[in-house]
Amino acid sequence: MSKIRNFCIIAHIDHWKSTLADRMLEITWTIRKLDHSQMLDRMDIEQERGITIKLTPARMQRKGYDLNLIDTPGHVDFQYEVSRSLAAVEWAILLIDASQWIQAQTLSTLYQAIDQWLDIIPVLNKIDLPAANPERVSTEIENVIGIPREEIICVSGKTWENVDKVLDAIIERFSSPEEFKAKNPKKFNINA
Image (cartoon, rainbow, N blue to C red; front, side, top):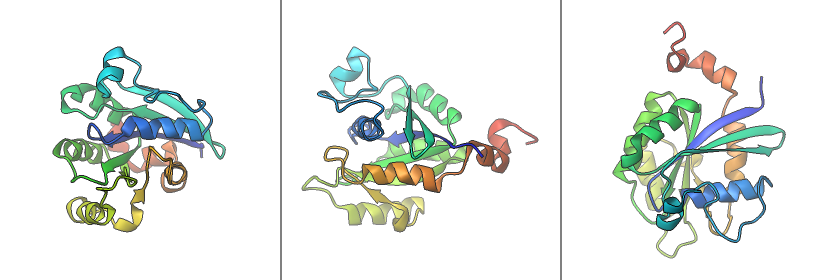
């Protein structure tokens, strides 16, 4: 089986999705540590407003695996780009701010990902903030989404804490694209 993982990050605006993506690129030595953030948000308006408008792919390598990230917009106004991202991957990281509740737009995108048979890794970001409450948000994830709290990874994109664990989880928890395709033929309209 191939050593490839194709994934996107599902997140609401201001949950530091682009910051987490930057840390992943830096940890894997795909790019060097940046003086500015949001490497994948290249358009002027994206940088100015701190939002992702257009999906952007990035390839990283870790432990002999090719990790293909598609940076996905977090706002419902860019639904077409979100749907394109979800169609192109087999897995998704569900990124939630540890200082907030799960946002409705995030749930909407998550349900689309589930409809595409994507496997999900839940990640709580911003655990370094004073207002962070990972226990409360983990309970909410378990109760609302049904993902066991043991599967949740708590990180800080700002301080780099546990970002390496997310990369390792992508390798360890996700199957190869071939296994995904065999398990989920409806996504590809194969004998569906």
